[in-house]
Structures are given as C-alpha cells and as structure tokens.
Image (cartoon, rainbow, N blue to C red; front, side):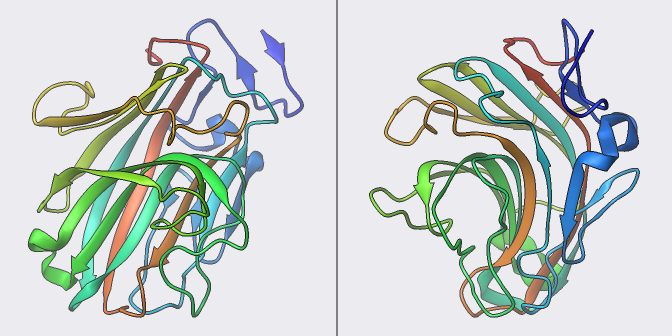
Length: 253
C-alpha cells in the first residue's frame, strides 16, 4: 500500500478509490462542496427549480497527472429520487464524471452550464425538462470534450454528446465510464447492479478530436445547472458507491 498526499487515498492492485458503502471510506475530508450539494453517506446532487442552486457542486482532487491516459474505469450508482416542477423547454441538469478543473458550471443567473474558462471532461449527465411528470423529456447523456465553455459550446469544437437513455422513471441506474486506450472511451448505463446486464446502452467514442488531452483529467466532480433561462423543472438525485480503478482495464470488484 502506498499513500499519496491525502492519507485517505490509497492504491491497491484492484481499486484506487472507492466510496462504497459510505463516502467517509472514500476520503470524505477530500470532497469539497459548493452551494447546496452535500456529502454524507451519499452525495446529494439536486438541480432545483429556478436558478437558486445553479453552480452547486461536489468535487475531489485526484492530483495532477494522476489519471491514466490509457486505462481507467469509473463506476457509480445514480439514484433518481424525483422529478420536480413543471414542463419547460429547458433542462434541469446534474452531471458526474472526470474534469480538468474544479470550478462549477452556471451561476445564479447563467444558463447552459457556463464556465469562466474552458474545461475538458468525460462525464454523464442527467436532465429533466418534463417537470414533475418527467416523461419523454428526461435523459442520460454522455459528454466528452477537449475544451468547453458550456455543455454545448467550445472555442474550437463543441462537446460530443450522445443519448444513453430517454424517457425513464425515478429509480437506481448503474453508470460506467471506461477508458480502454488513448483513443477510446465508453459510456454505459445499466438497469442492473452488475453494471452490464440489460436493460443497458453504451456509446463508444473513438474520435480523438473530442477525447480529453493527456494529463488533463484531474477532478471527480458533480455539478448542477439549468439550461437557458427556462428554470421550471428540477431533479432530485443521489450519487454513491463510486469506484475508480486507475491504470486498469478491470472495474473494482
């Protein structure tokens, strides 16, 4: 066992970081929260109706040049607790994944997940534009980028996004983001706790134009933001049982 800067961080043969079953075992002192996000035995990750908690986040610094450029597996359970609000053409959004920087998207008045400077990322986000009914206006979507100003725009190239699941009800969903090589990242959702059994859907990104740059990914982060000025919808969710296997092609056992 080799300790890093934070004694809660440890390296083993099969798993670098894990939060299961509770966040304190993941190194709770290393998590930083902003706005109304909370980390206890789970991460409470909500996007409220209105702009009141735009930019709320929780993040963990994994360290500079620590995340492998060729192999890693990030998994987590995402419990969608409830849809909120009324139907609108915007989106109440919560994300989770690996980012190049810690500042969160959005502010009390800004929409579209806006950053003060570009960030690179590989993530999955949850969105609701259907109010308390959810319905066909709910989706999980993957995103990868070499640099984004918002979740929809970048200076040189817009982020690459793909729908993994649409029109679903509150339940527990099992997420995986896996880097297989320097030119492949897969994003997968499953409805089963083994993370691979049906119902499942996956998107494989192999275009290096969108894959994050070498040594860019550093922070595990979840954040909330509202799309545009439409703020009538909301979502309550919880993220937990996170595992991150670095320099490995196998998920944590």
